[in-house]
Image (cartoon, rainbow, N blue to C red; front, side, top):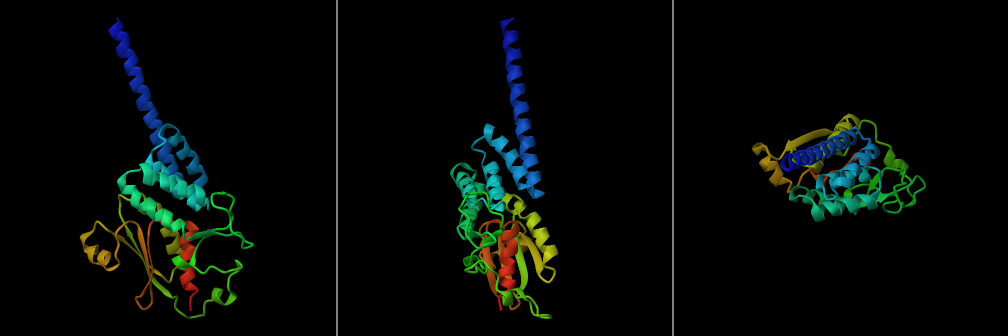
Length: 249
């Protein structure tokens, strides 16, 4: 009788574990779905539920970093990227490091031109990539009127944008919606996605020195590389980066 009770008790515990794991998996999938739909706050709520049970889940921290980055919560994004570097799987650490490096080049600006404090979570303006990443950073936060105007009939300075991606890279997956939006926005630019697992792309990977994924390469009309950056460039940060080159004479 005792053995039967013990078996029943063990079965209940195992059932509880399985149910708990299924709930966590459902929350994770729900969060990823919301992230891809650009519902970053809704995704964060799901990912927070996952972390309550699995505080060292590297993939979850990675997605939380990207959500906070898209919401201009720079301080929080950095904390989660650092957590991935500390406890996450090796496959994510390089992308997390690239994310941190990207955030070091980012300034969050308000409409009036003042800088938001990192991690405040209150910024309403989009992320602006600093000049090191290729964007124009006006001292007073106002756009140069001459730079805004694109001469009629003149081809844009950017001819082609290449994204080197891997199907096993969460960062590559995270850029899909940003990439699709950019293709619709910039009709005069050629967009090319190259899978690093395809042997036919090996020469291009070597040519542009690609070592981590995703990597974004921007090329001008003369074939010159304007921008070569590892790590996911998301949402407004991507548009700002492209616009910075389009405005250059």
